[in-house]
Image (tube, rainbow over all chains, first blue to last red; front, side):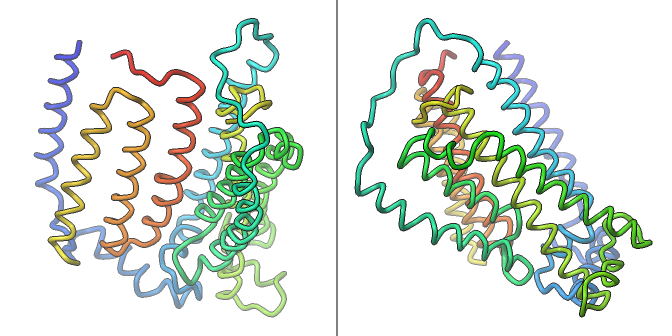
Length: 251
Length: 81
């Protein structure tokens, strides 16, 4: 079996290398993908959306549909893990697996450092979300950093305390709210007489904006939705993984 | 773009990838995988894809390592194959 797998990997590798020779040269300005679409994004993105960070403009506006379903994928992954591991909650464990070394109260230095670190990190995460238009970052990265602060708190204190503040139910609700914000902005565009996720129609209800600024502002709304979903779902995944779905004792 | 730097990171990247596959202790493999992500992040940043580098640092080197370690501590630390 191992020999078969090895041969399969080698053959696939050779085929990939052979195919790669047919690709257009790296950075070739005359290759088909670089001729129309990329040129349009590079030259027009800032005029059309007032967003200097081209990557955000493509992700949240031109390719908004993709990003919406990426968020949905994160949501589904969290749901699947909760469904598989949450099932264990009902079973009574007769034999506990080897007990992890108990840290009684946790170290006071770690707890105090966490107390100082978490607000700063969360503020930075919000900056990453809100400033994703102008600098690298955006909803996904900001949401991951927010989830990391929650994980840091569960490491410094214990899982039960943090789940008391941000329970499994709340993670589900916030993940739903995030996805709802994203899809809601899309539907709002339809209601205002445009196409799904075509943000320029939103200038009718956003005061003081024109069609271009409306796109920029709706991208922020969309990023906030992504961040909410990613934050709560990644924290829920961690909470389930680390406690084998029982949501009692963490690491 | 400094090609010597690129090459150095690329060699390290291949080494860490092979070591992460070969090592028997899964916890070490998870940590080496985290180093792999960090090198990948350096490579992205060096090639000018700062957005991707940011994501790689946050997701690859940060959260996925935490997930792997959490899973290893709750299952088994030794590989069987």
